[in-house]
Image (cartoon, rainbow, N blue to C red; front, side, top):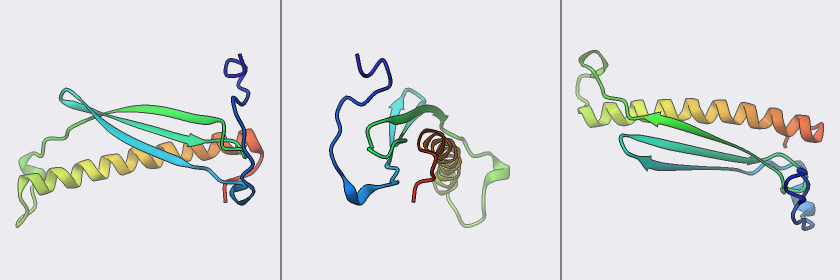
Length: 108
């Protein structure tokens, strides 16, 4: 019942983690695309979380993307890293906003 009311299911004392936001990321294969799951705590007690799931399609480098001296795989890995960094940046901005709206503070 507590979970439905957005209340804590459990709580432990962590005095060294005041104003802390923990972030977790995982990538899972889903056919030709990948799912990027992100989770971040948004309470001082680390018991409430904000989660979001992103669908990330695998980029295919075109001739215009190719860089002299780099293989197609290296270019593709750079494209993947760039797209995932953008996903993570978007998530962190949203998660920090949720943390601030829930606690009144920014994480340290």
